[in-house]
Each structure stands twice: as C-alpha cells, then as structure tokens.
Image (cartoon, rainbow, N blue to C red):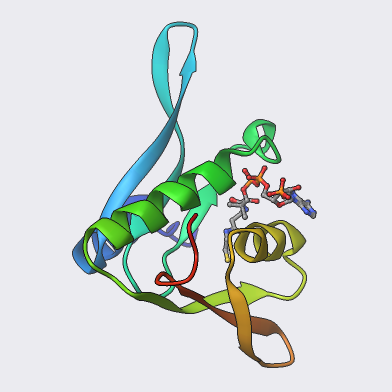
Length: 120
Ligand SMILES: CC(C)(COP(=O)(O)OP(=O)(O)OC[C@H]1O[C@@H](n2cnc3c(N)ncnc32)[C@H](O)[C@@H]1OP(=O)(O)O)[C@@H](O)C(=O)NCCC(=O)NCCS
C-alpha cells in the first residue's frame, strides 16, 4: 500500500515558512482542531478540515485574524494568494475581505491585498 502523506510533514513545512495556527471549536467541553491557517505575507494558506464547519463564517474570521496579525507585523501587502477558479467559497472569502485579482491562468486566480488600503 502506498504511504499516506503525513500531516506533520505539511505542518512542519507551514510552521517553518510562517506562523502556523490551528483553528479550534469547542465540542462537548473540549477544544478540537477543525482547521489551520498560516500567517505569512505570501499566499497565506487556510483550510477548514471538517465539512460540518464549512460555510459558517469561520474561514472569513480566521483570515481576518491572519490579516490583523500581518498588519501588526508591519506587512503592507499580501501577495501571491492562489485560488482555483472552481473554489467559489475561497474566491468569495478573499474578495469580500478586499483581495483583488491581479492575474490568472486557465485554472487559477492570483490575488493581492493592499493592507494600507483595506481595513479588514
Ligand atoms: C475556503 C474556506 C477556508 C472558506 O471557509 P468557510 O468558513 O467555509 O467560509 P465562510 O463561511 O467564512 O464564508 C466566506 C464567504 O464565502 C461565501 N461562501 C462560503 N461557502 C461558499 C460556497 N460554497 N460557494 C460560494 N460562496 C461561499 C460565504 O457566503 C462568505 O461570504 P460573505 O463574507 O459575504 O458572508 C473553506 O471553504 C475551506 O477550508 N475550503 C477547503 C480548503 C481551501 O479551499 N482553502 C483555500 C485554498 S485557496
């Protein structure tokens, strides 16, 4: 059987390229990891892992926290955010937070957010 991609490999990569945070939800009195987000000025990644938490405003609030942290660190622009064209949730989330499309390929959009303009 082919070995599965170890999640700690991905987490190690993200943590060494930015500040990796887990997004947690309180379930039956215990905090449970339901996603991750990494604070970095180029293409900050975010993912909600559990389907039952999608579309509940968590991604938007987590990305707002990423933006606030980058602003606190003195970052003036988020660049290179890459969103597949089919990924309407991610595209809406980015655009509603002020990201602008600055380029595209057949499959994906590239977005940027000017932190000196946006107030999210
Ligand atoms: C992208 C992602 C982080 C968004 O998180 P979420 O918690 O599901 O999204 P939210 O509930 O915060 O919604 C954000 C916006 O997108 C809209 N939206 C959410 N799901 C949508 C969908 N399936 N289609 C279209 N719009 C959608 C919401 O209406 C909301 O708009 P608003 O700010 O005007 O209210 C989440 O879908 C995810 O983890 N997807 C898998 C990994 C991924 O694609 N990561 C991003 C890679 S670029």
